[in-house]
Image (cartoon, rainbow, N blue to C red):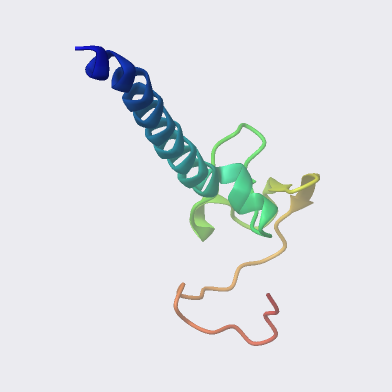
Length: 96
């Protein structure tokens, strides 16, 4: 009984440490998926002034006002024109 009583705090400490490590790993994965982390990597989110997201060209026809969230603020713009392009289609002049 004395041996088990002495081992219990160590076992609890090990278990607590493992749970802390699991929690830190999960927090890291959540942070990587955060929309703010994606924006910080150079992407932006485009929305209409009323807050609706622009997901496709039809959402923001020419002459529409749009707002684009970047890592350090917002761009306010007006759509001049559209050009269709599939997501997997390479774009000329695109520089990441």
